Length: 386
Image 1 (spheres, rainbow, N blue to C red):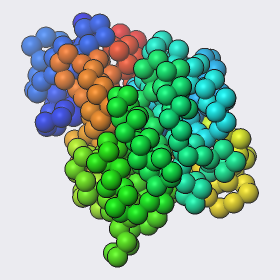
Image 2: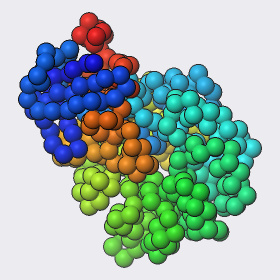
Image 3: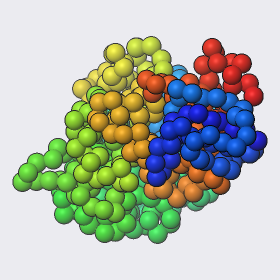
């Protein structure tokens, strides 16, 4: 049993100040306000405790990539993001050949079953060439039922989300096929009009892949995907909260329009997250990182990000004006609920003991996953050795 006390504890219903969290093994067994009835094992005075972040759209980080589907590299990427508070991560793959995608899915599925990552996200190749972003146009194609079926079977139940453009030939049928297989469909990298996106949601689509990015801008006479996805109560909208993909003012407008219960913060992070500026590879495309902004070397498109979830959490509080409870919902509770991850996403009894300890500036001090400390400040070694 481990008792953490005297922190500002952020729960789904309220902010407990001071509050306490009690952990037994892998699970949270108690959360409460005030002074607990036994001495604390860890005094977190001046700290903020939030649920472990859930990032459902991430390609890499710390110099590694999920795209290579290498067990050691995947574990290294997951560990990098854990150090920034992400205790649950999906492995997002990008557009490539059918054969390579099959190999990636088959290999990554074993890593999901081993608990290294929580699911597979297929971002393409069934997307619009017009709105492809950093995806290699050589690999883009309409969705074919046989290819989708083969990939889902190879995934052995580990494919959690498929991003596609519903306006492509067979697009709406693909939405129905993937949805019927129990996998979440996201609309993204799409040039569809408003009516087509509504039809896709009616067919089962439930997520907007990085809203505003990879789609036409919102226009008062042509609302397009942004208008359709933002207004529909059935849809969870992803936002890349780095201040570069989407202005903090627009993040505020979108997240308040959808509400924290329909807004999911994602990083869309790639290999260069946590690394120096320079040239990197993303799905076979050369990209350049300059002051944290990733763009194609040959082209002007933004190509993923160097964002971590603790920085996204900080931005939505400090620059977009959300309180800690709403920020925690967007960074953990909402993405977990969207994908039916019932054991994570909140500080509540019975759930996994996944939590992040932040300082007064909302910077990560320590991270607990499944009841064990997986990252903490070197200056706090003795404090977190319990």
